[in-house]
Amino acid sequence: MEPVLLNLTTERCPMALLLAKRAAQSLNVGDKLEIHITDTGARQDIPRYLSNHGFIIDVQLDNRQVLEIIVTKRQ
Image 1: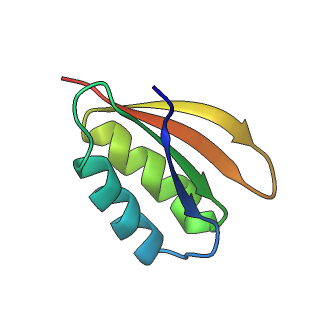
Image 2: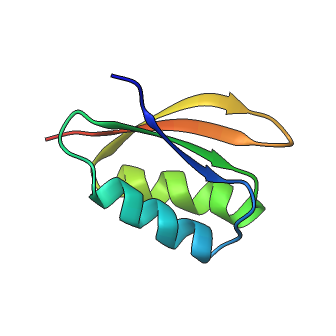
């Protein structure tokens, strides 16, 4: 199943974190969400928050322009 894309490249924290939280909470077990992040604070806060709340984080791309992660909801 193809992950749903959440493009947060135009959002800054705290809005980027809030949108990521909402999207992740709507996932069913095993569902995947691809998140694109550019804001410096959000690049740190979003993966940390999701990891601390039981989601699997897989970094696809991490460079100066963007952080792309795949988030999977585990049981």
